Image 1 (cartoon, one colour):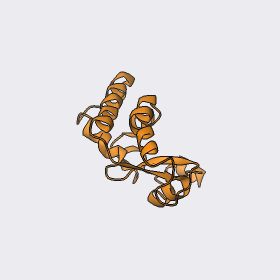
Image 2 (spheres, rainbow, N blue to C red):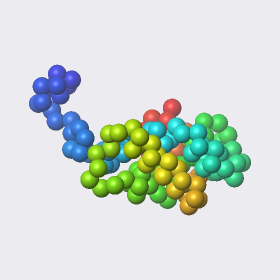
Image 3 (tube, rainbow, N blue to C red):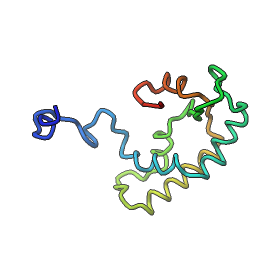
Image 4 (tube, rainbow, N blue to C red):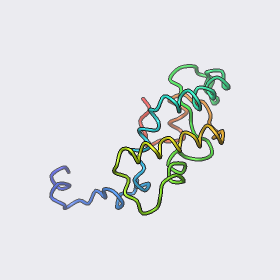
Amino acid sequence: MSKNRKSGLINVGLGPTSHNWKGGVSSINVITRVNKRLYTEWKYPILVRDGFKCTQCSKSTDLHVHHDKETMSEIIKKHMVDGIDVVDFEFKRIIMEKVIDYHVNNKVSGITVCNECHEKYHPSLNFK
């Protein structure tokens, strides 16, 4: 399989040709999700509100805050400028700050879920 992919016999669909393409938001998504400010100003208050328990099964370990109305990639796309290639880290940082501001200022809806329950929303991701 690897040999066929490398030779071009199998098209893996990278970048815009991939079925998972979301407009090039991946790296901004990563730096935003690991930002301490997003945790302290958006995720932590949701965890407190939900009593540090999964809203689906009441488990209190391996918790995540799940966007239950808008996805992170939808929020990031709102703050990107069409037609600009997001390669420059400083530009990515500016977008990240705007995305975090949006979460905090608009009280983006989220729910606390454990690994198992979060996997129901995103079966293709590995939360274990």
